[in-house]
Length: 427
Image: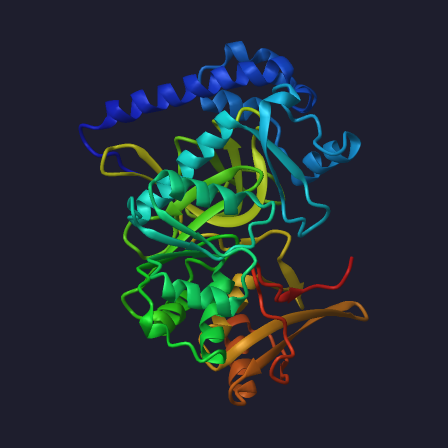
């Protein structure tokens, strides 16, 4: 990692202010936040800390299980609250993919901090005041829906909510209202393309400039981006984004429109660790992303193990400020990894293979425990029979024979938000 000549002082001043602001927030948390007082005992010694390395050396990791246990014991909001309940004005909750949904509360100051982070995402994609934005979300209690919508509204955009609409209605609204920016998950973006054919809707009439995707892995995969632009038009841009309810909007696409994610370092302290031994990995090595929220004071998370697998690269931008880029975006999740006959399989890796085949309309990967072995099978709906070709592609990619079965049209569920294509046996 090299530093641009003449800009070192800029980075030093930025780093000092970043630590100073965070240290003040630590003081607030240490005074009243019961969860952090019990979980993060070394907070009492913080007066001797002068940089982030001191914080990392003394702060324990925080897992989703830690937060869930606290909420179960102190239902429904837990004790990770820095202020009195009357200060909290915003409610959201996690999706509960791996357990019960967790409620999350935010003060208006923290909410504005998150809207500022989303504004960085919009700025990175060139969304301007007056831009027409369509949000293909259900507008349930998930954080990303509301922060994206409100940030775009504050930016002066013309915002069209798609909550409560069917996929056909959303497609027609995107075209009828001449939307320029579409916000949705990667799998729902693909669902819209197949639905256009199903409902005989001509996609060439759209005015979209970009589809901004988040909520799942895959937004930076070249195969996904190529397949999507093939359907919507080659001039369409795909813009990856990353965030989660526990931490807020975290990253926007690395400038250059080639995929990958750049973490907003003004707002987050990122680390990458080996998920098994919890030791830091070398720059460029795969590991689990760990995040500390620097500005979300009311319900903070420190050294939070996200469960997301990334490959990070440190560098500097054109102003001489540090960058922390996730090459290839989110590569997978630690809890999604499945070992089949000694081979580690991730949803994004399998999807990258299956995305090569435009004939596949929908698919699921089903895992089944057979005696002492875990086996996998791909079920897919296709326009023509390409079973043997898909089996061969999977064999070449993973050195593993994975049976592929063609199922009847309409057999597999269509994603309306996050896809459920990775079907694991109950533990």
